[in-house]
Image (cartoon, rainbow, N blue to C red):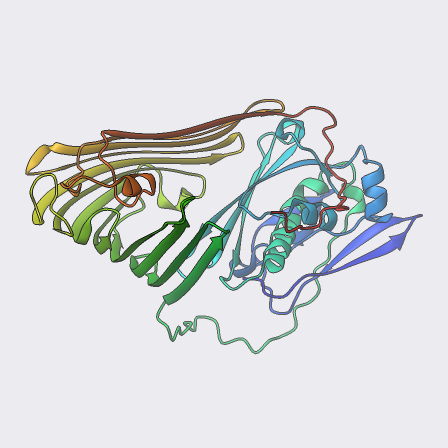
Length: 470
């Protein structure tokens, strides 16, 4: 991982054009990936530990001149960032030597950014550079790892540096490539440990997290409070994935009615879970889950489950940032202890079950798709079953027209925990208990259409201040 920022220097004058010199921090190695500019080998990418350290820098005339008039020779780029928090304004100001367009079909190069979490909680960004039009057939992939404690500014600067690196080979082949020059300064010997020495991790890959939140709001006739806390321990390697977590929540609401009477409601839930997964091959893995929980909403004093499972991924797990299609089958044993007698006259019971879940995830330049289908039932009573379908779709249909869809639907036949005694009106209105149902659904759909100028270079943040609007 590159921890030191690149030093970028612009030299030259209006007569000879700008020359860009990229100065690299100490200790960078050299690998075998070459980029040719005008038939001359001028760039060598870095070692596998730092493959994204190259970058391109400023342009003659400054940002204002770039924004005021697009250079017809500049590369047209569309950045599709599948990461909530991407700072596009920052990219436009830090990388002003390309033309940004708001429609991918107008671009010669699509920069597709996705993110996954590593075992330590760090962010692993994968940047795919996909050419089209005059760049059809060209593609490249870079990766950036940012630690869990990285700030938003550190993340956006890391992404900006990596995007610059990926752009070099394409800008070099554009009409403005003759104005680009990259140099690699000699590496200064460092006190790094000898090659081949293993890194010692005093935590043995274990990562611990804890979180606590309190939410409070109210007005004259009502007020609410919600407390939540969780803690977890994770250990992730190529061969094993281990997770242990604990969480709990408490809610209360207090109301004053028009006649002056008052009503209060309280609810809580807590639970613990563990997961152990063993990697068998690029497509297969086995493991088991166990959990224990309590919930006043579900009438469960204690619900415990233990379930071994096996999973098959049609695509290699290494491609999971872009595509995955998995089949997960599990068989488990469940133990329930209820607070109140259920509609089946039970205060406790033990039941075996099994489930099959199919999940599809695609993140492509044309959009993203997430879908899953889960089927489950109790093995001692096949009439007690459920079927859950989930779908999320965000697709660019044609130039300027996009559709997004989110939906879920479930057939429910396994509500063993329903309270036998009738519920009060307050319980129903305030959702203090789960109600009997045979199905659930949710759906949202949206269309957006944009037209006009395709250029998207200008950044103007005036009147963008945050207000405390009630």
